[in-house]
Image (cartoon, rainbow, N blue to C red; front, side):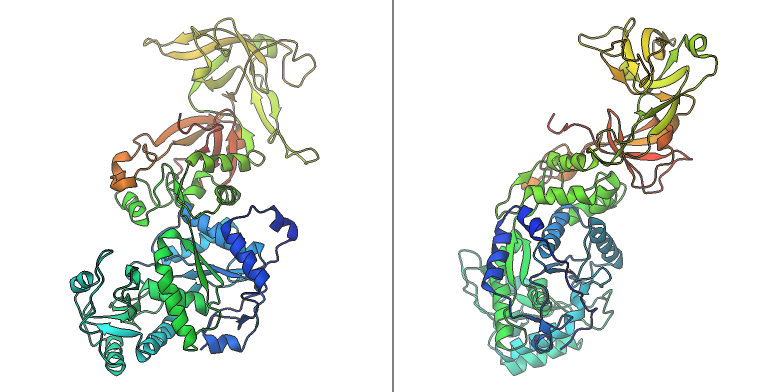
Length: 609
């Protein structure tokens, strides 16, 4: 049997230096042990997935290992999937192997091409190619439906499967529980010939949806309830996005998944701990089909690792969909969402997510990871990449009352500041930022206090500060409206103190503040995002996560930014000095001609404070 799919190319080689730098974990130890023992050294690969006969015609597999990432295309990927992607693709890269992208599309009622496309895009964005080539198409479980059906007929003929016509409730009751063994179905003793006849009638659409299922015949007294004759096929009349109406019976996930792995010659099937109880059935099924000569030997092995539990985040697809469809957020790519498209729009980078996955490691025990760990990875990545810029988020006008006398009426003095101030030695810096200072500038309202609190070092009557990249100024007072609200801050320019000029440092000040010139400042919409939930574990213990939504998770302000930020490109990241890291929004939510920026992360960790 050969399943038509693109031919894989030679996998990317990992260098010894890269391998040595990776921290060890139990998955790396398993893989290394298998490589040392030659566990999969005799495998053959025919260039595409297929059964034992197909691969027997192939060449020795050039991939030392094969892993897989098998999402069901029923939603958008989230940060937990990002961890799994980095593990599976990263291990394949590091061990001179190949990672397969396979869509586990066995449930036609919940799947959609929209999700297929979003998954492909997310993996590419994270920096990975699948199936051994930058141009290879993903695999699809639905392409294996013919073989899955043939395998089911083999199990029936060998006495390992039977058609059960009990109701769902009867099967549930007869299955037993942890303290009581199950009861055999009255249909369990049917002959293979009779089971095969009825199963083919199921395939041909002669029975109603839900009227019967095909079950594996294993052990109704097994202490592992998953081994008590699990269902492997059900009748479901639904149009499939790939196979259309070809089938009215569909395989169950627990049946399909190990077969998919085996057809693709996966060596290490890595999944999260909730699938640990399913491993005995995974092994049982592959042993039966390998014994029967349908699948190549040795079969894949499944290994489980802990899923990602991240504070202030939910990762249930159902609950994330509820947030979207109940309009609690603006969509799947809302920057408050933990989806990969949301994280991307928030300003997260592939490097930051890969660093996060590496930093939290791989374990067998569940634990909670503080969200600040993820934010720290983003700060670390953006520190040397994000160009700097001045932005005033809560502006008040500062008037330099002696400007006209000192500099001349209407004069605008050019100023420069480095785009990246802390580059490694020997690195070529990017061109500096250019802007001007004049009689009026915008400053942060919090940078002036008429009556300063103890320790306050910024503007107050009689105090001097430096306008960063500009001049030293001395505050003389303020102007208020009839309600007592400060409308203007007043100050005088200290001559000959322009940054970077001889003697500019002779006047000592205790603070430098950011600013934007009134003459060439640009209005911008800035979205200040906070955590979406107030509870660190919003859905733990059956809690209603909706009740934990943060009503102040988004604050939109009209800010004033320096000219260099006016034409920011979508997805371009900046550090607004003193405020944090921001990303130019890649989605067309622009009001008029104003640029729009999303807060990615603050300059310091504020979580838990």
